[in-house]
Image (cartoon, rainbow, N blue to C red):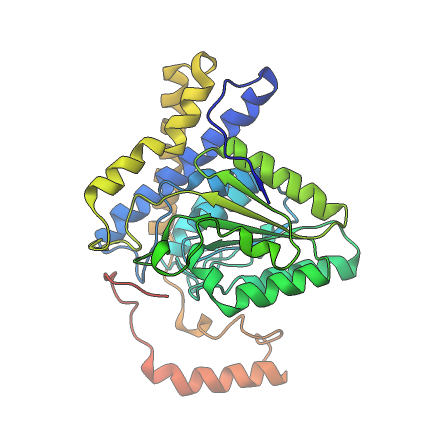
Length: 364
């Protein structure tokens, strides 16, 4: 296990364009999630939503090291991963609004958003639900003899569940091209990590499976990028999986509407100084003027406004779409899968109702 937690340092000339790209992505994620929060609280977004505000450096840094044909699997907190991997904001916002033009035709929503066209295998409402997807994708890449890589994002709470251990062991013994990225924000839902494990660095668990690991500053997008880049290249060379623990923090509650009785306001305020956007802006220093910085925010806000208008103009999904996409060939009633879908649709049709308005409360 290697530690790469380092203090902020001046940027080399060769890092400036990369840093600006990472900053732009983090701002886009922040603007998207602040918009999600507003419109969820206004009752426009159904279901539940979990924000990653404060953790943007992990999504931006890791996904910048990937190719379009690489794979990722996310958590219930997956907006940033999805956007950073390359999904269009229009399609994302339409999906969150449960509209027909969403990338999942309005059926995935926040916790199950997915975009196979860019290798995003899905957010997951089940804690530790992404490990099997990533192990499968990595195995498929190996069997096809491609150099694709599969990345699993997960939280500290997931490392106490069986799929974490099963799939790390599998990835290790089969030498799979996988990258396991822990976003350690110190809370498993509403439970502080120290209450559920007796170790400070979760990365030591990777040692038990013979998987090399790194611990990085999860507020430093460049540090995350370099750690991920090294791990990705290692996987592409056929040298197997890597575990990266990103020490980070979420400054919003576990879910939108969370009363946050499990932590103090002072604790949250103390972590706001770790804002990854502010830190990277400071490192760019005079190479990024205040006007240019404001323009990055303005561009992101315009992009979100356009996506919001697109989502609002999109039609509601037709009820007949509810069972489409579950099986290959289910749009053809002459196939067994198609006939099954028709029967299921007929059986459940009397129970179809309007999509409920947004609520508050935790959901996995």
